[in-house]
Image 1 (tube, one colour):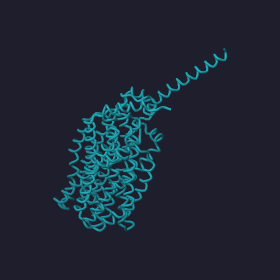
Image 2 (tube, one colour):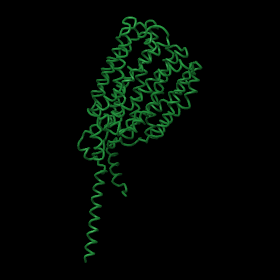
Image 3 (cartoon, helix red, strand yellow):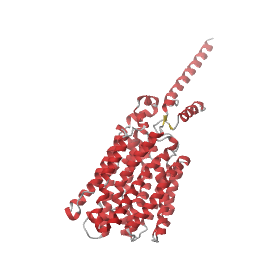
Length: 498
């Protein structure tokens, strides 16, 4: 009888332990509830994408102006003498703004994780507009001497500081608004905005070059694109201030969501806005982000910023002809950008990114050999080959990078990683390429530089995890319809448990 009682007690104890274990497991991995899932409002998503993309276009319009006026700015702001020295000085001033981009990322990124994405994106818009407008008002070196390049560098630093919070915030904003299965498609519009900004800047410079001629451009015409920045900045600010905060950030601030996601809340409440913890807890992902962005930025700035200067300075192409070919290339890329985003949703981010990296690795050399032929058809063909490789990166990267980091530190981590890489590799690309051409005497340097960047990119893409059609880390699933939400809940409830 005693043995029977002891066996019954043991059985009861085992049952009690199993019950406690299951309860603990449910607390750690709570069942998905309908209220945990974000059902997106398509109209709100489109407004968010439009505001972020148009604001991004205006930011990069401001930034692109300097690239396309590099030769003229070298003449206006630096002492007369060797044209190559003036050009290198101009590109050095272009690169100097990238020195403060990581600082801008470290300030604006954690701020965006603390007070919200919307307010910080409005602030970066204001700063970029002020910096660009001010450059258009600086007197020339012939007028005020030494102070001309000093003021130019100062306002380039203002531009760079504001840009430090732009890409990380805008890509985070779109990624957190978009449904999981269409994040690539909606994210592609951010880079569509980037190309639109570059195209607008190149188009305006082309029109002014054609209408005014070199003397008038150097005298006063170069100022016009910079002065346009003020009104454009106000438009971008208006669009951004009209938006609501992202659903993912609102969920992060919701105490009920924290209690339902106990496993994530520890990170969300302790790492939020803390740079030291970002570096300590997320350093492997930061390194991956830096490698991806470095490869992408070298090829991006080489083609979209440096190429007109390369065509005119190294190959003797007319300034207007070089810009016209670049504009044509960018328009083609804009037409297929959203399709690349859709492909990344369907087949995954990694296949598209790998295609772009391998394109630069194997097509850079033949592309530049074509460009060196000098004919309109050859130059256009070479640039289109490079452009098709680049669009695989442009149409995919905006959805890839935000998904690397959890919601609580997404803006901060992405801003830090992106801008460190852009500072080290992207903004210095025109300066490094120009200097290497001067030292080595070979005009094939851009091809070799792109190939080296592509090798790093291939390794980085191979190391990253696939994120397509999956919820953002630290956020609940995001779907387009209530029916899709119900299917998710039902699928989890009926999933076999072992």
